[in-house]
Amino acid sequence: MATAEGRSRKKHGEGSFALRKSNLDDISFQDFGNLWSFSSLFMSDDKTVFNWLRVNGLLPSELICHCGADCTLNRRSSTTDGFTFRCKKGHELGMRKNSFFERSSYNIRDLIVFIKYYIEGYSLHMSAKCANMEYKSTSVHWASYIREMFCEYIYTEYEMIRFQGDVELDESLFGRKIKYNRGKPTGNRIWIFGMIE
Image (cartoon, rainbow, N blue to C red; front, side, top):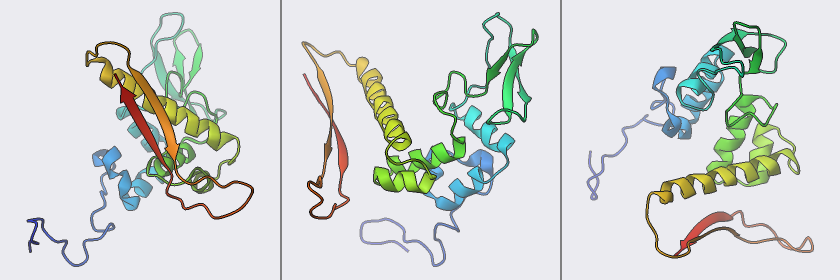
């Protein structure tokens, strides 16, 4: 059935659960909005989750050791993630080497939960709470790191465009700030990135 705008209406029973993806190989970043698809992926075993992260570029699929030899991924239960890269000469590198997660020893699933909620616009406090992170330290550092990544992405994307003169790029957080413990936060805080030539 179509509406006045020409869009088709959802059929009865076509909620988020009905639209979930059950094949984990078909799940992409765009599917993270469906909580069922997101949960089924990250509730899977470590090998499945880490393989998905490698296929989607969040973890390295191969590494070359400092000695020049190729490394292979091996199970190692004594490490945080349970896997390491090892070369034929016996050198070991962490599975997170040269990745977005290299700077942290937190569980990767918890970091993904934090990033998901933070990017979806939840407050820093709520994102940290959902991921069971320290609010005033770890979550602040990760939020800063994510903003740096956004700025770097915008910078590299706009590097292809040739501007004339000086170009300034800035970020600002708009929303109500509580002072002197008076009032309530509205929750309508948003990051704005701006650029002028």
